[in-house]
Image 1 (cartoon, rainbow, N blue to C red):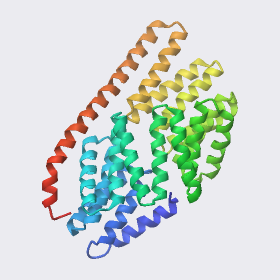
Image 2: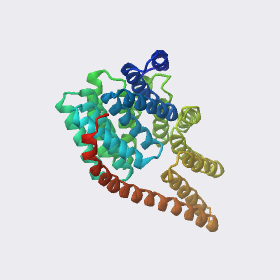
Image 3: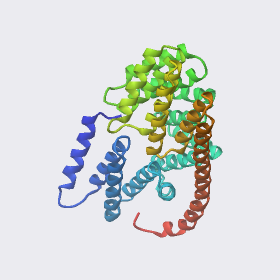
Image 4: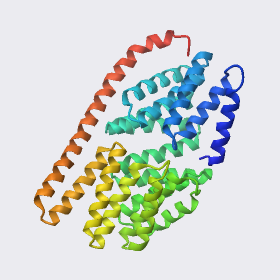
Length: 370
């Protein structure tokens, strides 16, 4: 992960190349590299940069630059909810990457497709996708990518709350990151800690989570927010409430700062609600859950909104406020149904777009501008 000053240097390099009289392949390469660094911090800027790279690459008939920008665009469009467009770009990028036998670009396009499978909850396709990517990385002795894929494969099971499987896969990532002296070791340690605390192993989890935070550069605010959340959850499970509050409050502040992640803010607030209930402060628990629902909406996550509404309904049930409990339970069911509908829509998109792209293969094979 690059530091903010390194990102600024990439911006300056792209600006210098833009100032030359004619666009060039090095400018396309610089824009594609800059896009990759912008994705975690500014998706809209990343989108504009990738679109500029694609336009210039096609103008120059720079094949590798075009494929790279398509792979970048597919990932960005998936993140901002343009599901069908992301699928089309990823499959087009993968097709041409296979034509030039560039395994790195094949992997980049495949990664978007695997995450699309996960969004559609097609677990079998997602598992097969990760296995394919791991096999390709291993065949090229690409330890860095192999480690990254083990880490992300583990995240699939964290999301499914299969913590034992997540632990098994993430430990493989950890071993490789340690050998490589890679900064992503911190994320692997955090994810292992999160799985362990959910398996009831809070002592071991605490040691690993503190190590993860110690390894985290202060400028990596998104990571720091994640790690502080994990620490807060561990402290909450250990009934160390003052320490839990400190970690969760700092995580929330970072998540709500510019460049933060609203979906993490929603998750943190739901854990803050648990902390408030541990102190028998129901009013503050309600407030935290209502905020979680708001930020879940801003993150466009019906799943998070459903979890928040279910928790609010449960609190009203405990208070024997049946009308309010029913009201929020209905809202929970509404979000839950929207999640189910969204997954069905994505499953249909996978089928429809795959058929569309199959029909495009003969056209792409004859096209000479890639």
